[in-house]
Length: 440
Image 1: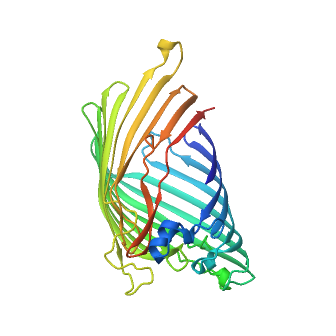
Image 2 (image 1 turned 60 degrees about the horizontal axis):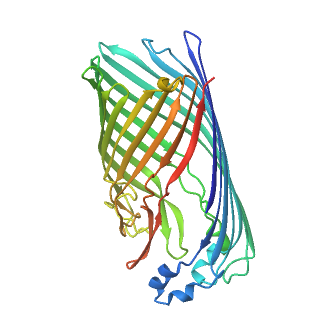
Image 3 (image 1 turned 120 degrees about the horizontal axis):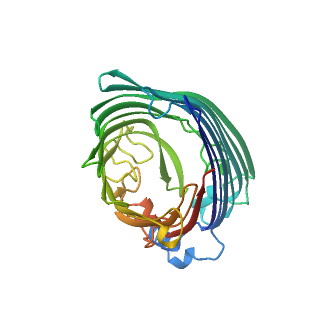
């Protein structure tokens, strides 16, 4: 696979005294191209009992897939100064994305009939949102928070298919889809400052994710329309605390949460077509998080955290075609996650430079997870090491970074072809790069 990412940010902030203005502009471009062997000889040999050589004919089952995505985001915010008795913020958010998915595939394997042909699919999303939130003193050290976000969203999908003569597929198919949705989300909560360095809070939030269209068109090759999936809604309940101890040398935060999701968007592996589709399933999750930071010496900190999560499917119809059952685990949600790391910052003055040098490293652990909604098998736990080293001044910083420094080949996703045949997708390997940030 060849992949290229570009990400540009522009942040503007100005303090007008009674009000602070923020502007955040972002543009991202991602392009990728991959050549895929539709019939892996090891997987399909085990699945069918045929020798691996049967599935190793060069060019017999191959797909060329190109994906391009451009995303624009603009947000404007007005907020109260830091020391205001009432903390508030309000603003507008504009979002636009364009995705193009082009594919050209041929196969002599009947199971991949819906994967063959020439595809030119395009998708757009436009979102316009207004939001506001305020935290006001109520009684004594008790404060109340209320936030709302009103969003209008429009989505389009354009599917174009041309057949390549595969038996069972049509010569061509075209389909255009669109949807509009208006949604209101928000949260409310209470917080109490028990002491200057210790507070507790409780919040309730309403979430909403607009429905959409499948990126992978598996029905068009058969002369059938692609089917949109429904919107998802959620309620989130959370309570937690923040504290600073020993003269601000130790910081501790903790939280307990419960999520109730209706029509959650989950990926399901469709065995007959060997492709992924989106299923809307209800699920609930609950758990807790604890994180802490200790300043060992000036400029040197160690930090860590642990998370416990239980996520299970609920209200699943009996005999669901997805293979899911009520009480099953939500795929790719680890019951245990953890991280530990350090950060060291030292003056660059001994080298005759302004600013500071810094180095940061951390280890992230992810526990065993269910591979799919049917809980066919588990993905093993894994851990990755990340690092960052650089220099930062008052208005400029530059750094080198490495994600998955040790190039851990962990299993990120999985799919089951049957009781005896499973395959997995290896996660992102080592990434090394350069970065810089300028303020003006």
